Image 1 (tube, rainbow, N blue to C red):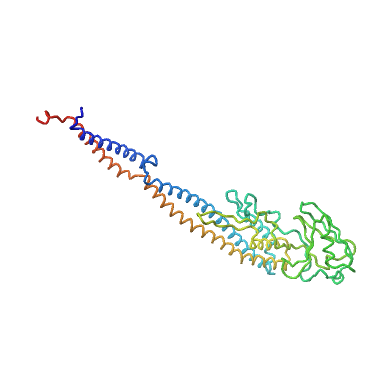
Image 2: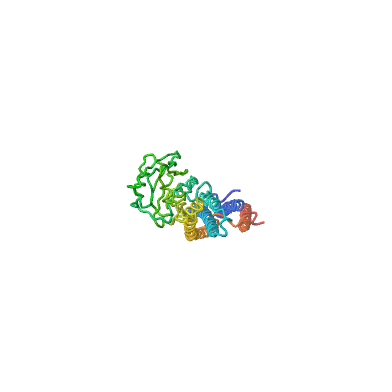
Length: 409
């Protein structure tokens, strides 16, 4: 075909139209087959910045949701553990009340029951999720509780009805001169024998304390403190380590009998069983919000439960049972507060979780609207452009045949 001056304009217009239609047909075919408007950002230049912003926010939201899911699972696991401890405490309270009854005491082996309960509590405090010990604070790679230390050290305790002070003289207690032989263990588990000589005519309780505590290599310590750290001061002679302690007398002394010294656990208020740290964990769950969460195994509510179980597991003394019951009652009153704190953390996390889930749905739809096409609608549009392209080719073909001779025919 020869393009003449007279037909040049029409030919150019028809060719441009055909080329544009062909390009559009190609684009629509790619969109229909892939479901996307373009294979690169250039094809959606007018929406590129908005798409990039949405994709960035979508990625951050997914990370926040992973954080909230992980943190919530940990808290829910902790909440379950605390609930189990509350159940154990409630059951032990019933057993202790039953054991205090003269008619039912023989039916309850309270020491075995308390030992089993202690083992359960230790395992609950060592709850592990995905390799992380939940009650251990920042040292989550190691167990929160050393089970070997959860029981109070072996302890000899003076008569619960006799109030002592440092200046109480041995003579006033009716003690005669003699020697105490204390066989115990140090912090490394080595057996240590300590001999304590006392003179009834000159010594008082402070002298006994000094004689025991001043030994350089010692397996025992002595103190004046109430039973369970409450009540009137009593003489405590306890093991330094977690082994056994035995106290005997030689000579004519009657120190042990006059003071009514009996092997009864008297756990301190500190939590020597705890091997974690004081770090409270933190999770970033939004751009400007982090939640501090978690309970440590040395929480006072747990301490009191451990103290009560430790006493009940170590003696059947009725007065001691009353003290153990007091500790367990305190634990029962305080454990719901621990549960409430965990529940509040879960509630805060779920509030942000819901917000992130809603935004994720919105962002996913917005991204889809920018990137993807409606395939049925695109196919319909493709048919229209294919028809237009075919018409363009027919028009170009017919224009090529135009001549004066053909026109006159």
